Amino acid sequence: MIRSTAAQMAAKLASGETTSVTLTQAHLDRINSVEDKVHAFLFVDEKGALEQAASVDAKRAKGEKLSPLAGVPLALKDVLAQKNKPTTCGSKILEGWLPPYDSTVVANLKKNDIVILGKTNMDEFAMGSSTENSAYGPTHNPWDLSRIPGGSGGGSSAALASFEAPLAIGTDTGGSIRQPAAVTGTVGVKPTYGGVSRYGLVAFSSSLDQAGPCARTVLDTALLHEAIAGYDPKDATSINAPVPQVVQAAKDGNVKGMKIGVVKELNGDGYQPGVRARFEEALELLAKAGAEIVEVSTPNFEYALAAYYLIAPSEASSNLARFDAMRYGLRVGDVDGASAEAVMNLTREVGFGKEVKRRIILGTYALSSGYYDAYYGSAQKVRTLITQDFTQAFTKADVLVSPTCPTTAFKIGEKANDPLAMYLNDIATIPVNLAGIGGMSLPAGLADEDGLPVGFQIMSPVMKDERMYSVGAALEAALLSQWGAPLLDRAPALEAGK
Ligand code: GLN
Image 1 (cartoon, rainbow, N blue to C red):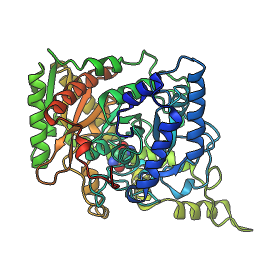
Image 2: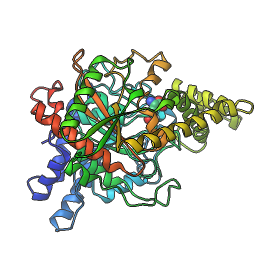
Image 3: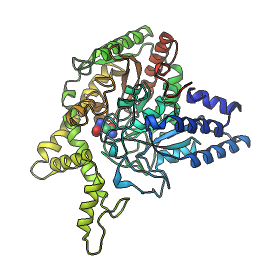
Image 4: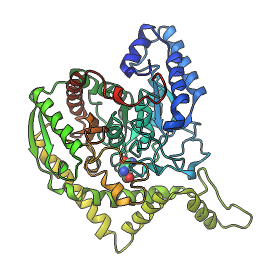
């Protein structure tokens, strides 16, 4: 049962073939048997999940009309506030903090009766591409336990790929939903900025952060997308417009007559041969399904990485100032006579990890008087140019595509001491965040040289998220008929008897 899709699970719940308690227990059992190898979760809420499941079952028994995913379990990235449940953002500085409120995403999950299994591991404050920056130890990629599951949302992607959960929530500031999806053979979507509320999402870079759905199929992702999306007056950047009809698009999977633009700048020599090969094959399948493939050029993308690593740290340096040893979690050195400043310094010294400190220092420098125009100011100008590149490209194509990342999953430890090499992983995902548009990654197959999953990225214009679901579903169907079984069936078993 745990290897089914969320849509299949929902159908079995609706027909009475199973109950949410049974389904939730099956996932908790799975978590118990594989977590020592995977370490996808920071907190498993066994009691809370079973209580929630029982209440959905009771509602169903009474004949209440329930939402499409009611009773299906989900893994929640630990950057979203959930009332009275540990929310650490992968950081020691938030150890022990219990949010007094639900984020809007969590409120929407509860409203839809989606069962929250627990909180997943992540790079500290979502800064990273491997989940190695978590203060609570790395998560392992179920395809190869010596490799990274992507980041920052590696806990969520690993939970999906190891069948610990059929649904997950991620957040994507520069690629943290799409890159983990790519390297674990799962599906992840960064909705249009403003499409899903950021209220209660612990801020890393407010102008880039966006929560989104993760799952093992395009349809499951769409179902979750519609459950969490929508206007929220509590988020000033929330878009007050109808939610794109992504479920219908995923069901239709129709690309006939659609123009698909291959981004020339995101498909070059720096990409692993196996990544490029799977990407080219996917394009052929889409052409066969009736799409027209065109090439587009986005000349300013070469500056995207540099701009991102000024804008994101700048916003982070400001956002993370709130962790001052007074308001949340950890407090170190609070002895008689200690000044507030000393307590703050000591707490931040002990509570923040190396990468978070690096970003705060970078961002503070970029914003400092005398350097502001040269660094932060220039980066904002580049951001505008990149948005214009997208606007131009979308006059030639309905969606844009590229490989999601240049390589397959690398080894744990391989890039841990080389921040620049780590940052380069985001080269294909970052432009989407800078422009605030939608982006999806879905599996395109395995690279010949290492047998590891390759991600295919689809980008769609602002609030036209349904387009990436049309293309994703068409590609997924074509690949599935070629493979004969889901890609994840080829991942090694984590326990005897699968
Ligand atoms: N890897 C990128 C970074 O380290 C993106 C992270 C994210 O999307 N949260 O900033």
